[in-house]
Length: 405
Image 1 (cartoon, helix red, strand yellow):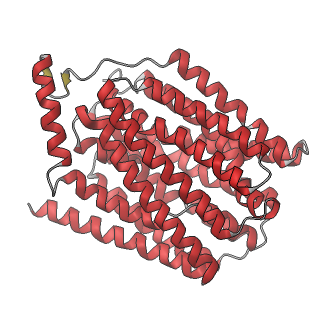
Image 2 (cartoon, rainbow, N blue to C red):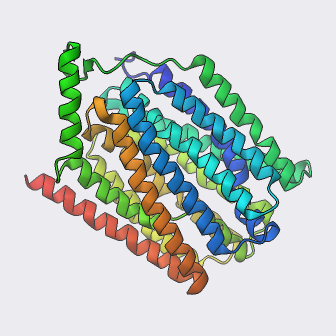
Image 3 (cartoon, rainbow, N blue to C red):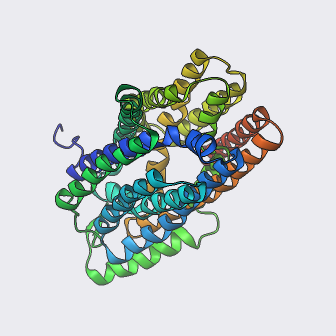
């Protein structure tokens, strides 16, 4: 039993790569809104445009990379190349002298994320038994968030401890990401798939091809499939889940120093790192939608409190609490998608998931930035909270409907 409970080597290796990549990314991210507005002269609306466009680019590419990884039955090349693009993008951010260059760099970074994410998530599902998927995705998110702790702490060390400039700090961020790329290129092994049915054993090649066509029709051509209903609920929450850059701008506008922003961001990710694996494992034992409802409800409550934060202490509390929704929902959300689709179209399914997510994040972030600048920050946060509660109501209705059947 103990042997069966171990996570697969691919899951562990992908988690370590995520840790290194996020350490590099989050070394830059908490400082980027201030760099854009104070150094490069961008407005809050431009910050929202950059982040929304970047996330949508990632989601668009995720759809095609996921579908392509199903077709060629190779996921590793896209995973490795995606991380390599992300590492290269940090050089461009460090050298940027105007905000359009940062936009270009963020698009390059998110293109890399788009190339790797759906194949990576599908690979995790390929090697993980269904009753351990929540735990596997939770573990991956936990290491991802560990990197998001290391990155901001490195930023503080480099900026305040060693006295480096923002640009020198950004150049340093290339190193951990490059290490992760080399590690994946040489150590990641991909398992054979496409000829094995997860529940009923092996099938011959002809049966497998018929199964793939039937599976694809069942997921993408049935109007009211469970997969499509899941995408609707997740997309609605994505409208509420605008860029976290606005949280950092809100803290900075309330008087939190630039040097303290990475510490706030690190505190946020400590909770995610500690509890994501456990929350994902919990979703293996109960209906995953319960965790989504709890996570999205807490998101709405915390978002509604952000306009009232005025001190460093209040922002520390809120940034720590803000980790709770994602700790509960991230692993459960991905495992839910994996549960609803067959292996033959799993990459494409994750691509659809990420495409819908990214389009709604783009719309939500643009809306948030517009309300933040033209009306008030409070109105923007309250709008986000209301959209999150709408997602909760839709998911609750789906849960009750399925229980009644």
